[in-house]
Length: 272
Image 1 (cartoon, rainbow, N blue to C red):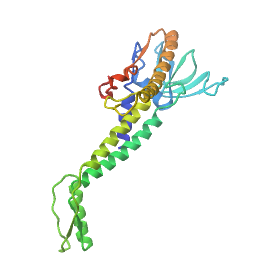
Image 2 (image 1 turned 90 degrees about the vertical axis):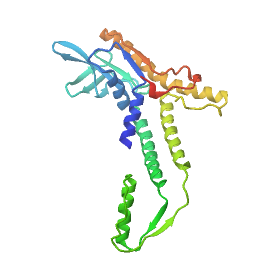
Image 3 (image 1 turned 90 degrees about the horizontal axis):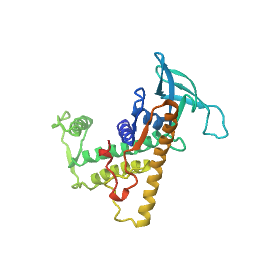
Image 4 (image 1 turned 180 degrees about the vertical axis):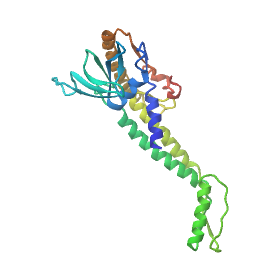
């Protein structure tokens, strides 16, 4: 469950931005993947058959002291085919994920853990909804036969008891169950997804505002705008410098209209 949700949330995040004008040697999705993993994406020059290409380095470390703890002058990088040292803003460009170079993967893992626990609880609740009684066995052989039957029922396989102990089962009928708990878990799942999207600056179209006053709505929208606009601005500034060094005119745009949340949000499932 955790790995599934980790991939889903990372996929959501990778739909936020579009890049136009990149050199063929840099796949657009690699920029966001690397930035989300380590907090920034370094673009470096490499020799390729007598010419110079730009690539995104998936493993790197910055060094070279400046007056500030989060700013450096050089970088060591490595890819499966290249490695070396580069000078930042000369033959290397750093694309921050945000102003603090904070990775997104820690936040993704946090929400993936919550969603995995919710899914496990939801599966257990749905299985329990199928039960109408609890069986009480008088010996181990009968208990094993009952456990085998329940395992098949869990998998949706019709089955009957093989009473190995030639004994009887006592049926303890339980009160009728409702779908209320399952619905609560499903709503919790959706709320967790919405919480993750809001943290990166996206409000889902299903989010309601009826119970919020105007000032609360404006405050929420301003915080969402700060998150996603900061990420976009960091990318645009970095690619402006990249264009000056490489000659490639790269434009970065956001696939979310975060300036118009009054329309009810966006549907992340339909984002390109």
